[in-house]
Each structure stands twice: as C-alpha cells, then as structure tokens.
Image (cartoon, rainbow, N blue to C red; front, side):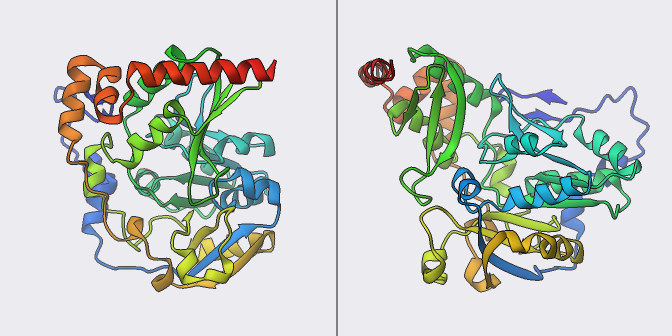
Length: 358
C-alpha cells in the first residue's frame, strides 16, 4: 500500500513477484459488488434511541452501536471499530472491554487506517470467538471478500457513509489547531449536540479543562468535510450508496425523521437501524430491549447516503492545487476565510476562556 499526493493509500503490484493468479481481483470489494446481480433489500427498518440518556447524548445520534457492541462482549467476544489515537490518527482496532468500546462511539470524519485488522479478525474467528466488525460499507465488503468463507461467529455492521476525507489533510488540521491555540489539544469530538442533533458541531478539548466550540477554528474541519472537497475520489462514484447493504446490520442517522415520523423526533438524536440478514435479526432481537424504537420502512428512511454518491465540490481541483503548491494554511484562508484577523480573534477568545477556567 502506497500513499498518493492526497494522502490516500492505494495498492501497488510488484510485477517481479506477481504470478498472475488474479486473487487480488477476486477479493476486491468493488469488483465483487459490480458482479452482484441479486438485489437484497433490508428485512426491517427501525428508528430508535437508547434508553440510557447518558449513552444517548454522548453518541452521534441514538446510541445504536453501543448496545450492539455490548452484546458481543457478553459472549466474551471482540469488537472492531474506528478510534482516534492519542496522536489524532483514525485507526481500526479490536476492543474486549466495556471501557474500550467507548472509543468507537461518535463520528470520525476521516478515512481510517485498517492495515492488519482483517488478518487479526480471521485469527479470532478461526479460534471460535464472536466478532463484531463495524466500518464503512466498502470496509465491510472488503472484509467479507478477504475471508472468502462465511463465519457464523462474525457479525458485520456497516455505517451510512458520506465519503472519507484525506487523513493527510486531517493531520494538517490538527497541526493547525496546535499552532493557533494557547493550550494543549487533548481530544476531539466531531459531533457535539449542544445545539441539538440537527446542528452538529466539532468540539475541541484542551488540557486545562478548557473546551472550544462553535468557533472558526473548531468549525473548520466539519465545513471542509461537508463540502466534499477532500474526499477520496472513488467516494464520488461509490457502489454502496443504495439499499443493497453489505453488513448484517446498517446504522446511521435517521435524517428526515421529523417529517416521516414527527412524533418520534428528538433533538438528542435518532438512529436509523436496518436489519439486513437473519444473523442481523438475531442480534437485534437480543438488544432491542435497550431501545425506545419505532418500526419504519424503506420509503420513510430514504436519504442521500442510500440513494447516490456525494458529488465532488466544484472547487476540489482548485483547493488541492493550492494545498499542494502552498500548504494547508493558504488553502483554508482562501476557501474558508481563515485570515490572520480571524485566527487572532479566535486566540483572544481562547485566552479569555482559559482565564475563566483558572
């Protein structure tokens, strides 16, 4: 796997070692998806939120993932999901404790590094352990193709995905925060619901119990993400933005709940959960008592991530040219108004907040 100029990993073949077995094509999730002819729709669709208000509020939407992961732990299993490391790199890893799976909670608007995880999962499955894997649809399909054979002790959860931004740009954003902050950055929560679930904002956590929210610096990453200006190019031609889901269960935000099921809407967030297979149905039946839920259907849950890929921003090429020629600070100054004055005022606000904390 080699990194391109935009920071995305791509496979490269060593032609001197290649025996032309074509196995890499046989396990490619995209080629596999293109060859599928039978369309299988979800068995059941639910709108839900967790009964535990603490879990509900700290989750991206309704807290669906937490209950699914906890059920796996009850069976002495291992849960694989995306987490943000102390160095602010999004990676996939396995966790076996209730405390550990909390790291998987919440949105991570960056492509995760998944290298080595499929091998580890195969090892756990061969040893007979229950495994839950959560990831983007292409990651789930990739795992299933890699394993080749089906495992009764594996349950897959795909998330509704709007595209994966460049890890390289995200690393630059982290350095940008550190450069323009008066305190040490400790943590990032990408979907804070202070203004309500419909208006998510990124919150920065600093060393001295100080947080930053709804400021130009804190809002910058989500603006970049929602503009689809730095997504992996293939995301704009995604094969998985439809109702043919690769996971046993699909989870995401139930956007449109206010109009489709207005009495069930809540500003703390509502999850969409789609049961796609009999294995997923069995897991749902074990966890459903953890939720307040309402049975829905395909017609009422439909949203962009289930219809078509996000188009690339018209300014994508311009942004990347400016970034590659002159760097992150120059690109976000022109596209997102991050001028010296804005950054200075942001830093003054940080100083005032830090003084208040002390």
